[in-house]
Image 1: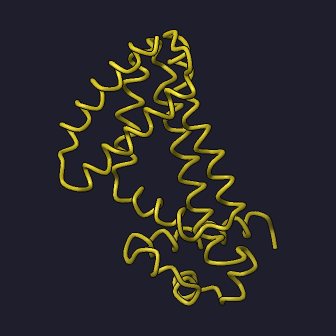
Image 2: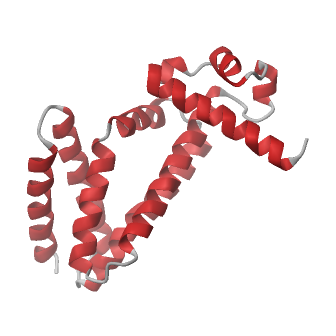
Length: 186
């Protein structure tokens, strides 16, 4: 089989899995449903992915890569480190608070094989590293620790949003809190 055809089939399987996830959650992603959606036999799907968990892991890794590429693209034209941090905070909060991310978090905590988990952690670290550079430029003494703390409060704000708080209020409070913390860490 040509590399293009194999890649097309892999992408088709992943697209069907994403559609099933969106429509029915993690439980909806089954090999029989993927077979029906793609027109491939179940053994045919196993030629490209070793398991349902492997497919879900690939979706997560692709999502994390897209997230990292997008934040790189957004931050590239911004020279001011304060503005880079502000944009990073709002972008990360929007992502972490999204219903799609909640589903991704559920997958990563319950279904991922360890090797995919390790790859996802590495990619998450890369995403966080885009915040370390502006923190360093501002003279933060331990930018890695501060970066992890910022992500912790972003996660807390996202949880509050999922419980009914408004995005605008949480984002505004989060930004003020993080800026005060950065100033204290300089």
